[in-house]
Length: 108
Length: 113
Image (tube, rainbow over all chains, first blue to last red; front, side, top):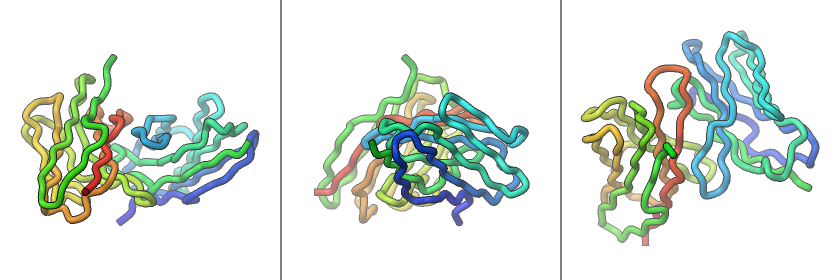
């Protein structure tokens, strides 16, 4: 059973636009929500993470929004750049529960 | 620099052959993991280990085996019982407990020839 559901599966955004990727989780015991970025042929790298005691965390152009009551969290990439083109994975708690990934393409 | 080293980067297996993928970390992390990645499937957990000489099966352990004789090392053997082993394999490590992100290796791409 997929405990973390991620959408969309793929996303195309123009340069300078906002990329939004959503995740929903089921287990209310989850207490750590990281996002990973993966470039082709490489391992994923931790991008940003949030705990459920805050509703938003921002690091540069990357922001996590967290809605505890809805059991949802999302990644926003502001001013998206072609170099942001990658696959993004959300995860919950010890990251044994990964979403299936979103392939982001930022067009020039 | 601390990190995780996976080797080899590319590996070719003949039918009926066992192969072993190496994963070494110098981060002093307690827990180590093996994932399999197929296009459109995300990351699927094969095995994980929280401490030396102990490991647990993940969602797709059939056809795979692991060992954890040292804290730094967590090799994965893909046995001949794994009927569709062609995939990208990722090793990761973390401090056990909540609130720690994973550090991933750069992966091994295994192809059956």
